[in-house]
Amino acid sequence: MRGILMNKFDLVIFGNCATVQILKFKTMPRIGRTETAVNAKADEIFYGGCSFNVFCGLSKLGVRTYPVLTYADIRFKDRIYEICRENDLPTEAIEGPPSRSYSTCLMLQDEDCNHITMMYHFGEDSDQEAVEEYPHAIKPEYFEKAAMALMVMGNPATGYEIMRQVKRTGIPLAFSYRNDPHLLPKELLDEILPETEVLFTNEIEAEYLEGLYGFKKITDWFHKGKARVIVTTLGKAGCVVYEKENNGAYHSVRIPATESDIGCVDTVGAGDGFVAGFLYGYIHGKPLEVCAQYGSTVSSFVIEKDGSTTNLPTVQQMLERNRRRTDAKEE
Image 1 (tube, rainbow, N blue to C red):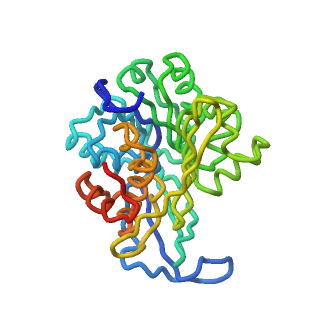
Image 2 (image 1 turned 120 degrees about the vertical axis):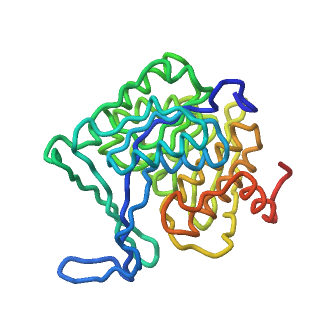
């Protein structure tokens, strides 16, 4: 189902949105030791969450995306609706907290860009059940509005229903995996992974899934499910793209990272930017090597500023930088 799509939307995306406050330190704080944050605007709130990052990246690239998203912080509402208005995208499947119990994230990051993320709740009803647990109403018509489904970080309350509808409709599924056993328990992964056509992981996540399922390599999914493409990102080293061939075998290609113009300021959201760039190429029928270059190029923009969505490129900006790659192919 590759190439320019005739459906109203290129894909439907599922997941959660989150606000994030980032505290940067020279060395990661330790128990019994006081550290002072070094970033000048440590109290600044950024809009993020894996699904929101990918959604923003796709929207900036002009991909027609149907958002089925939840946000857990009331401060998020205006921002997400603004993006939908700017890109003429629907908002009827966007849901906020069911009560006055909100949540946000606090990220601690050292100078090597290693980070720890913590979530906390606030609001008048903050002692109620955690916001991320409430179920989003997953309607069957969501899956009939697009040619492909994209699942990012979800939760069990909605994940099983998403998979039920994926199986019912047969819609191709892309899955951007995040290693969070609480939100993605093995029982839910048992439903998702066999149905996934395009799988994204980083190197550590790939190793975790190999151990979880007793696989020698992440490419064993080519023989266990519907996987056609598996992408493993390697940070500064780029990524490896595996593609299943018609005879059941597979081949791989390693794609170097696109160089940033100004260097790395913040790596948060780089992986999500990669997913957005890759899928832009994928739904437009580009060779997988080009898709991976696009993904890496979007990431090179993301890391140039604080915040996961503050420096996303337009198509023109992405293509211009991508053409400067020594291995750039014709688009």
